[in-house]
Length: 92
Image (cartoon, rainbow, N blue to C red):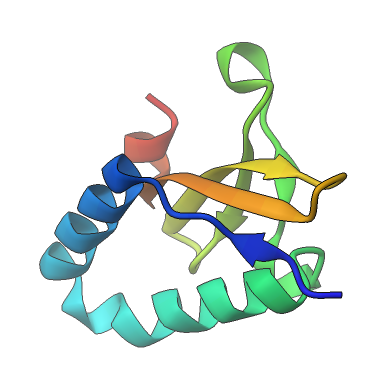
């Protein structure tokens, strides 16, 4: 069973801004989102749960420099992206 991505209005705005600033990552971003729906546990996504003030949030990698943080509700098979950006941007 595939997972379902649910996009909030705030995430959509962040993603649009991110892709305007980084048009060269558009294909990688798209592939990351597709793989996330098919198998969020795929090793290339490097899915991991964050710690500290972000302990309810997970992260996947677009590449070595850029991440997508998200709420990840495994029980309902629902993934809600929260933020997208560089390592420092999303972990602020």
